[in-house]
Image 1 (cartoon, rainbow, N blue to C red):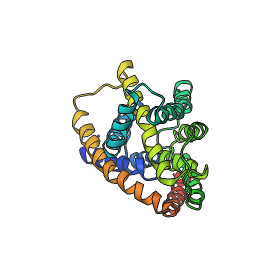
Image 2: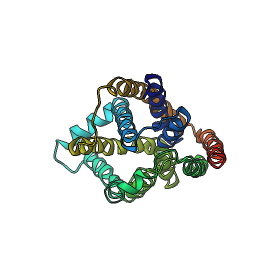
Image 3: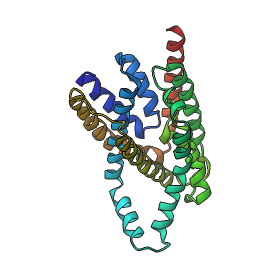
Image 4: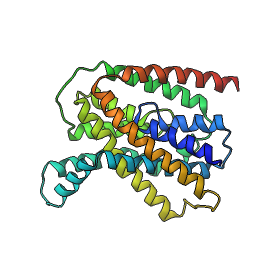
Length: 264
């Protein structure tokens, strides 16, 4: 993997993890455009590292929330922080289930499958279009909402379905306040990413080669910095109901991806 390619893919990951345009889908498109012909495991390694970088940027942006949650948890009481953490854990169940029992099937979907990415981007566009027209509310996330949003997160494992787009749209369509929906969407993915990294390290699936250290480090740094900017920007965009522009973008990129896929 070339250094410049790694930086470009890192920036793409950092931006698209938070902007509702599908990070996994754009990474697959980016690899196809840049001519990445790595083995699936090598591709998975780089993708996981970039996701960890964006998880770290989430923690930095929401550091006050993260600190309050941990502080509340160590009070060992059924307080607001404990309830919020319980909802986060509940939202993880669908994705964990899919990841454990359908890991091989999911991995087979990654690898220059631009037609699938195109169709999934169009679905993302539809979700964003509907969410942008939802009325304003003051509703918070309850436990049933958390599980339903978790199902959306599990579906968003598919390349081309935006995780943030799916979870935020689902939250808003459930009548949840947009600011609360964005906060929950970004925080709910952090434990999943950290857990996946820990599991891969434990199982020995992540094996850094000497020639990979520099490009992967560059990609990590690029993803982290781009993630900081995109996360902050996305909070403002959702609050101001600007998702329609991303719906148009996803729809157009989806059509182009499908056309290119059939052409090739």
